[in-house]
Image (cartoon, rainbow, N blue to C red):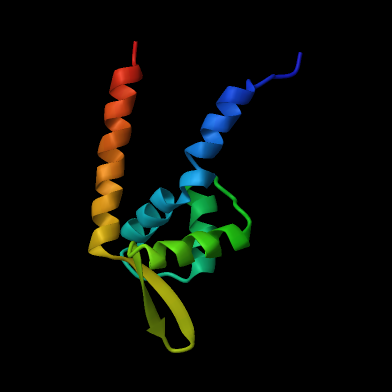
Length: 108
């Protein structure tokens, strides 16, 4: 019999990955310790987290993160790269604490 994953679990997985991609983008940039192009961020998301969103999704998320002050743009020659801002790093750490507190409340 084929594995029948409940829709509720599929929704949770989507909400904790694609719909909150900003967390993974910040983590990739913190781990790499250098600015990256949006394309390179997409590659790292696939390598590190097995998340493979469409390129347009990554570009949109990175753009919005810039508007929200979570990322800053760095020009290196002809390339546009991104790095986390202090605001982005702080938001990331607060999000991790929130997730840890939520998991602790849900544990049996």
